Image 1 (cartoon, rainbow, N blue to C red):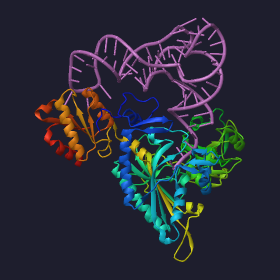
Image 2 (image 1 turned 30 degrees about the horizontal axis):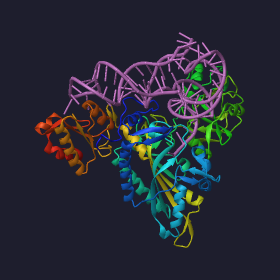
Image 3 (image 1 turned 120 degrees about the vertical axis):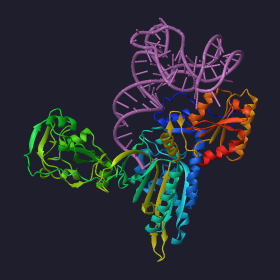
Image 4 (image 1 turned 90 degrees about the horizontal axis):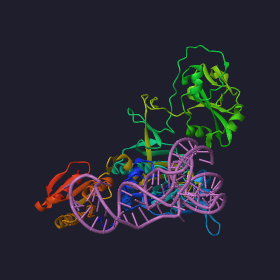
Length: 563
RNA sequence: CGGGAUAUGGCGCAGUUUGGUAGCGCGCUUCGUUAGGGACGAAGAGGUCAUGGGUUCAAGUCCCGUUAUCCCGACCA
């Protein structure tokens, strides 16, 4: 590409409406521009990178034998009602009506349509296995879009679906996709971790996430370097810490604690560590109150709570519900004489002589023991903490933040049952199809790459993902010999298959250098005064300049890109 | 959905407290001097001050409404 007469611009300052490092760099480098909240234009530079990412994904998908197709984004609402997911998605689905008043939605993910497509193919067990994928625009009305391309409302997703006759074959198909995903992540040069995750709205038997590691990430990854344990915090099991028991039992005492609602305040009042308290949190579980007890310094894990109670929605109760359940203001809830079911974290079982709220505004009980109240169940209900015991090997886990770039789901028969996707087996028996679904966000991957590879000059793209591989910068457009030599090099490199950008704008050299670094072209050829002696300068974006003969440009460039 | 903030040339901002007819930096145009890491000088172009109403002789500025955007939280494949 020659830069004059091209759509190319950069900005010198950060955008007002962008927050993250990556989104600001991508906007400044002219890759993307916010159109409305959580919706982006992908401009030519960004599109080049995105297409390179997509090409890698397509290549790996095709290698697994997966066939590409394209589904509509506009889908009758009925399709999601039939699968039972319309309610699950709720407000996060964009919905609209056509001129006849028929309700439609914009697809947030496509299990249903793919199951319908599979139905057209599948009659017998002989019709499987097969798999399908698409690269298509998804719509999710996120309550709070943020971090540029990382949390958006309209985005391209590669989603793949596998169809198999039984669990055994499904596992094989899953493993094949899983391996393809590893190849994709490796080829994208992402620093990533694979973690166990919750299946969420997708349902199914197993979910693994491919997480790009960066402090910006919204997901917390629980990792153990000793045994390789890796899990999203939402499903990481906890090993209860067992308090030493000296056998003494204090007597249950009610104490006035007028201005102590938070754990910090109560700990201050009693002059004891938060570990001697039990927080009792009132949750609204599908409209009904439930109390959850965890040690004072722990946090409730709502995913675990939702699973334990087999609930659809779990959220902290509002003050009115708290008052109804406890008879007290928020901050004084406790398990003794509470008017709702109580669930306690396992760790509470091993505590003695602790302190809880008294269900009376301004009072707490001390000297509390497990015999003093009744619980429905003890279960793992808390979030694992940084430095906790690894549930797999007993050493210590540590936390990292990640951006979920990909996700694989072993769905089982959830959708085939909902949508009646069946086949006849060898014994002439009707069976349900086993499905898997696999998603990757190419634009998220692009943002994650920008986040992981940002430096003080711009984005340091991996060599094969940069929008252009080589930039030829002409120092002075007024010097005909420079222009001519640069054009000549441009033609040669392009003919050899390189993606080349020729900066033939009539600007000062410094501006061009800054632009090429901001955009992140890995290799630069500078054509300046040396041309009269048959020499140009080459420079890797993050390396040293080198003065070479013009005849050697091709071989030097080859050498750089081979490594 | 709760709390907070913002909206002024293409971009980033000041001006609002104290009402008097809009300014700065970057970018852009022209000319000149420059020319290897975001040059300098001179002269210019470019704004219904988000939007609708109101107060006033007079509103970017004060009052009421609306919309959009952002932040914290809730939520989230």
